[in-house]
Length: 132
Image: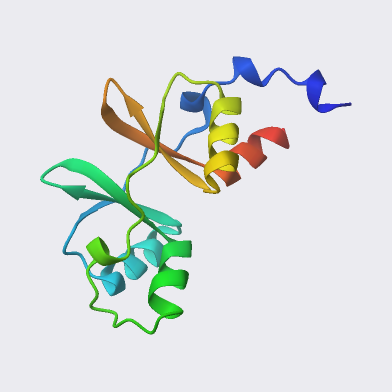
């Protein structure tokens, strides 16, 4: 079976995204974020400023910005987050998420609906769907 045999245009982001979101503010520390990720079994938290999404902190950000540079664990996420936050609309096909992740070399996209954050979709979500 080839890739063309699958119709990825019919599967939407909203069908595979994770709706549970963990958000923090700009002053949350790297240590607090690491504990949230560990306890939640997740690889990213979204960062908000006055209720507006402004960035994301991923396990990769943590490794490359905190661990690799020897920054203290009380460093604010404002200093380590990836910004601007890259988003995708909930009613886009999953192929659009794959294309965006590939072109931007990222593994996680915040999902929006009518401009409001409603979830997150990851490369793992895409691979899981592919394996079905």
